[in-house]
Length: 303
Image 1 (cartoon, rainbow, N blue to C red):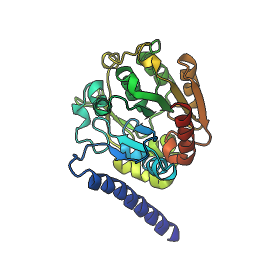
Image 2: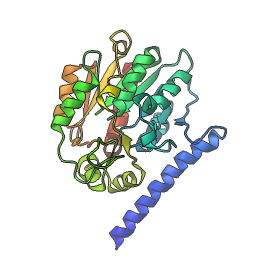
Image 3: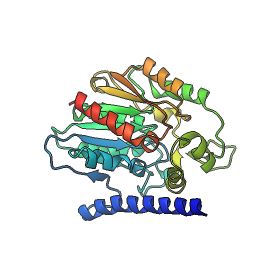
């Protein structure tokens, strides 16, 4: 009974913590809409600006442990966590976000809104690696460094089609995750969503049980883009290739496994490869402090 009460109390604490983050954002930005990104600002003119981009089926909420670390412990940084299309609290429904550009649009709009001389540190997790790759191509002058946290990392000579085929060949059983169909199971699936068992065993297996419960409530389906649509993500050496990249490997990731991460970094070498030990796919939740320390180190090395 004590264990059950402790679990309930921990969940309540997380709920209150998230509520404070979101409430603080809305109180300080009362003229903004509910879909605006979470921004924690610093008054220090020498601060760095981290832009955090979530993975498939997740949202800005998945960075809730990292947000206060970057702001409160570092004491000098600005942090923005975005919701991509039909993700987090973005009001769109996944089946209406039928193009990859629509999915990336919140990030592209944000990058376009930055002052001309501001440069940010892009941090993409999982599928968010594709989004930050597109931002690097469109706004290379606004990116100090791009950090791929166990994320998909295409390149000018290493397109998403190659990545998808290799990743698909390595994928294990879906457990209780499922495809979503518009015209029955014999038609092409239009979406994907994680099941609770899959989240617990392959995505969050090293994360606290409270975070698994949180994902079970907040995760949303993601649209499955076909080969033609994904091919629209074109990256050039002149633009994308001009931006420094750092890849952070997750040692115990069961979704994008370590051998696949190594394969990506061999095929499309970044400037630096770092590793977090004992982390699952959700590095920011299973090892938030370790990720925080690496991001601060990266910020110092790539001004």
